Image (cartoon, rainbow, N blue to C red):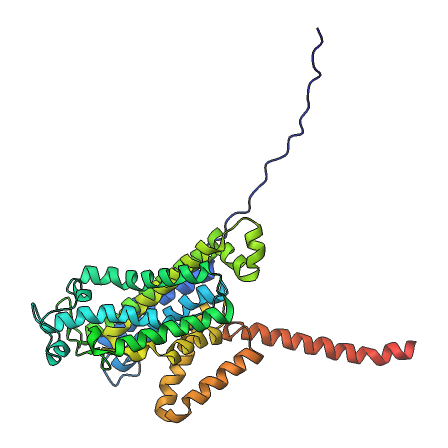
Length: 393
């Protein structure tokens, strides 16, 4: 009886996976905590407790302006998720922003009208009862849920058919623009129950608290800041995960990603819905601060301008779009007062300059300048060494 010779198997050492990168480095957490303190403590104190006329007083106008800019920054961050990290350029995100604003506006109109009463514009149109889509507008809890669900569901239905049909590139951008324009025309009609051309205005209170007090203005400012910081952390966590790496792979080479066994449809659809819900949140925070929402927020120009914020700040950087939203809208607030007829020309010129000379946006401009200087120095050194080489030859 013979025994089989022993089989020697080579044992491979276990592969050590790289440790996951931290969400933020030490410097990043320091900046984040500093921003949190400014939003929740420093700015409110400067507005409420520092008397007017003092150099450190933060005026009500600046509190409202900064609150709006933080809402715009959330929108720019949402566009960066789909454009900067997934390669999907949307020219229709003004729709999702406005939908979140309309959901909140409906609740504020119900509260302003009082229990059992119809909003003022419905009385003017001689309506006898609320339309079906106003059924949940009296509940604040339902309103908060609908702020996310309404933009999310509409984005999900639209995105499913668009991505399943493999519509991409400029064609996708055009149909998002067409969707927004169609929604704007729908909301302009009085019979739809959205206030027609005037939209919603005349808000008085929220949860029984007046909207016209300095403390409420500061509270809405702080909520906008917390929402922006929360969306930033969520986006950073999303991008640094395996899910985010697949999104970037879809952006860089969608066909190759499919050959690797990943179906791009659920990834593109899910990030599209997340982006729309972030815009809905921004719109809901925006409306009580400005006191009005109308179909003009869905205009094609507004949606294009939102993409400009992201491009100016710097795509695929998360921090860049926030900087872009503050820079562009801060400049707009100043220029529309100083020279209102020049703003559109400045905006168009800014986009051209960024596209041609600053493809990385403002966030990467310092590195671009350093690289340019290094290239100039290398070129100068090469020119100086050329005569010496020729003499030796």
